[in-house]
Length: 83
Image 1 (spheres, rainbow, N blue to C red):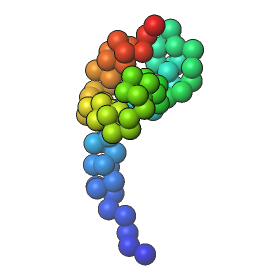
Image 2 (spheres, rainbow, N blue to C red; image 1 turned 60 degrees about the vertical axis):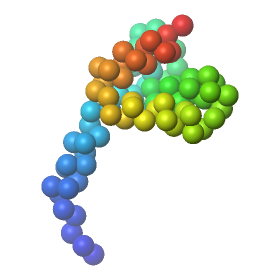
Image 3 (cartoon, rainbow, N blue to C red; image 1 turned 90 degrees about the horizontal axis):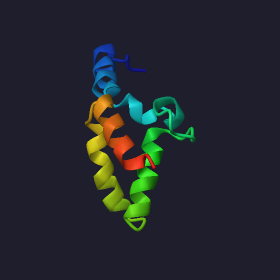
């Protein structure tokens, strides 16, 4: 069995560390949220509803969130999801 290259593993963790907010429960991120669905799921569901359940359109809209900072994700998610 090959040894795990810890430097690559840590680099990968660091690469995705900046969008950890996407996996946090909505009600832990926003005081107005009632669901414990992850932010990622709430955004996905919102886009699916607004795109007539077109998976490709929704995936295209989700992609920028993977590159945003947690602060940017929070701001954008709040503007899209707070009712």
